[in-house]
Image 1 (cartoon, rainbow, N blue to C red):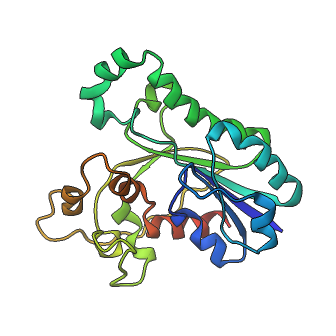
Image 2: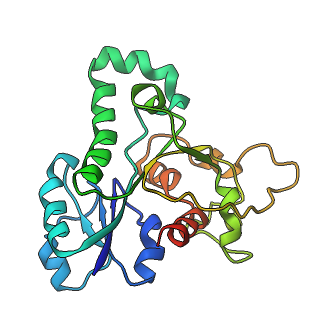
Length: 229
C-alpha cells in the first residue's frame, strides 16, 4: 500500500486529496494529540496524526517505511523565524538567541534529510524567507489564486474567513526534488484587488491565526495530487 507523509502539518489540507484517493496518510505536528502509530493503524485512522518534537520523528518514519511505499513527502517548517516579512524582528531574536536561525533551518533540513534518506520525492513550503540565502533559492513560486480553478465554482474554505476558490495572493515558495509542479488554472481576483482582506483578520501571534495563515490552499493541494499521483 502507498502512503504520503506531511511534516509540520496540523490541518492536513495538503494530504486530503491523497487520503480521498485511498492513500494512507500521516501528518506530523507537535500540536497533534499523543497516540501511538500502531494504535492508530489498528483503528484504521487516516490520516494518522503523530505528535512530538521533530527530532523524535525519525523512528516513526522508519516504521512507516517498513510497512508502506512512501509516495511523496511534504514539509511545512515553521516560518516564524524565517520569513522576510518579519525581518524587523531578526536583530532582537538574534540577541535573545544567537542560534535562533540555525534552529529554524534545522527544521527545514530535517524535511530534506528524511526525504533523501528514504529516496522520497519532496516538496518543502515557506513564504519568501531566508531559506533562499541559508540553503538555496526556491524551485517554484506561486500564489493561491493561480490554482483556484481546480476547485468548484463557489467553493468555500473550511475557514470561512478565506476567499472563495482561493481567490487571493500569497507569494509562496517551494523547494523540491522529484516533484512535478502542476499546471496553473487561475481564477480571477476580486475587482480592484490590492491585497488579501482576510489577512487583516489573521494578524497577531495566536496559535489559531498562525494555523489558519499556514493552511495549504485547497486548490493547490488538489493540483499537486493530480500532477504527482
